Image 1 (cartoon, helix red, strand yellow):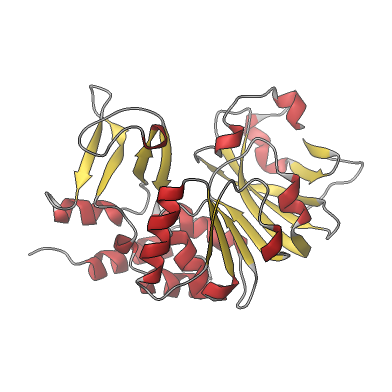
Image 2 (cartoon, rainbow, N blue to C red; image 1 turned 90 degrees about the vertical axis):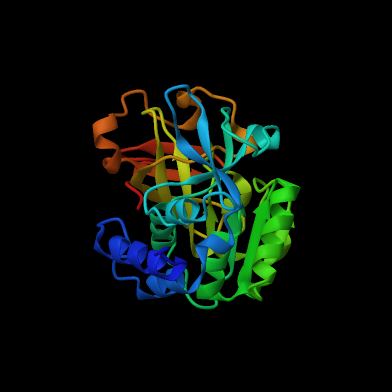
Length: 298
């Protein structure tokens, strides 16, 4: 007997309830996860992220293997690749190339939103709409009218808008580069990025309310991204700390590698002690260290 989406969603939620990086005490997040059909946002054809021995990634086709496709949709720790090489590779078979868009693993999305901690009625800016799934979870918490979400790829933005609308969700979907933010929709209580950056865009800091939170994956010199949460002082600066090791695709405008010493990283940064690092960001740039600006922020 085929396993239903409902039962798979319940099993995935149960696993994330037991996981130390799962729902925690966020009952609202579990309820939102159970109420939003993740499969509704996943394209019929996606790639499995782990390559085969030949270096190619397997295409999961809903029309050919619907049960396998659905099971992978609710694998708690696995993303699904929705775009390779900015769409230059069509989803017609096994392929390889640079991953440029995905629907993140359920566990990653839950962790991101748990640390964001949006409250009912909060104004939220999401950088990287992607499939629209995270947008729907945010809408379940703060109300769709309070969500502004930005997607640089017009095809992805259009599809996400359509998928959201069929669930009667109508957030403000903006097609465009997310690095400048969206001033007209702010100020925001929360800003969340679903793609990593090397440098925190000043526009995001400028568009946060006092005590507003920014949650974003930041590239590190350690070979992985670090999930960063910053609290705004309301004057274009923020401070905070790293939360978890993560791995995200880079925003398009920051794909080019840059020297880490020019991004505020101390040359003696210890990859075993990243939890001790503190971050300040603002008009003077970003600074990362055990103590920054003479004080330990966060």
